[in-house]
Amino acid sequence: MFLHDSRGATLGAAALGYTAFTMCQAIGRMVGDRLTERVGSRRLFRLNGSITVLGLVTVVVGPSQFVSTVGFAVMGIGTSVLVPLIFSAAGHAGGRGPGAATFVSRVTTFTYAGVLTGPALVGWLAQVFDLAWTFAGIIPVMIAVVLGAKAMAPAGPGETPTKP
Image (cartoon, rainbow, N blue to C red):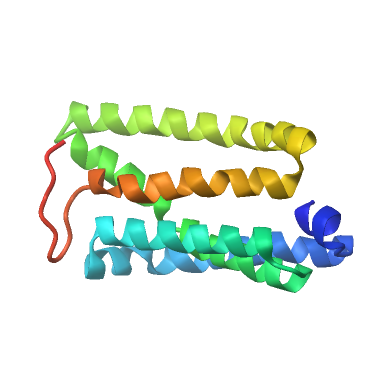
């Protein structure tokens, strides 16, 4: 919708934004475990969160449908490992056994609630403010998520473990 309504893309060209996002997200998930082992979960979370911010900024300020489509692709790479890393951190924070299962189930419940309510909230805000301004409003939220990444566990190479 953004590419069609805000950037003047045809419906076919606008679909490329979603395609670019999902393809890049799938590629990122395929290499996510190896990257986590190599750089550590906290660093990877911050890196990918920052890539997500870069992609979102590119989408919002991109002067053309092509640039905004590239921004959606960059967002796909950035978001690819965030949820799996959050689930992993929740499992580690809960310790072993029932504690881990409880933490993961709570995080999963909130995550899926966000998946259901997020698009509706974005749509409502887009009707009030415009889709570009709504996307712009997500940028500071994503920056806060990146800055809060020190809660990620376990520590990877060269990282000091945090206590839950």
